[in-house]
Length: 116
Length: 116
Image (cartoon, rainbow over all chains, first blue to last red; front, side, top):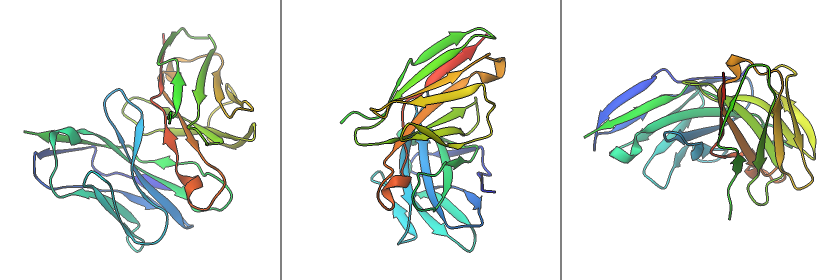
């Protein structure tokens, strides 16, 4: 069965410092990987996705994530964070099966708390 | 282009009552998935609708049921509410046809249900 592990429930970091949010998954088949961000009292916004191709994916606001198949990881990084990046970040996985939109399996989330 | 819309935004019910939540998918999307997000947890998959039929189901009891209409909008019904049903209910829409794109789910802002 698929599962997603986000080891860090909370990551405090100072503004303009780099950050890494860790995500590991388990699956016996090929997967699609996602990072979603949730701001307080809001729904989920898609931040990054890995479907195929280059293992390094980037977002428009400076985040990047690298798919590492051998380590079954999809860690999220940003070289310099802003106060506005404070939010809950969820890693999710779905099986790469054709012909369907497959359910997302989410981790428990990591709260990124950016301090001035 | 309207995104995924959910109504109502907040709802308060008492134990034993029934509730109906509504979702309109993003324009052009034909598949709707529902997730339950308990406080401090990642979203859990409830079920998915495509072509007005339930296609996948997560580990939720039969008290949770749904419907999809010809215009692709969807409802989530929960009967005999329990205190533990208190959560944020998220709707996600996606486009089923086409390699890759079909696996990207876009979320609404959610309906926060409180059961007293």
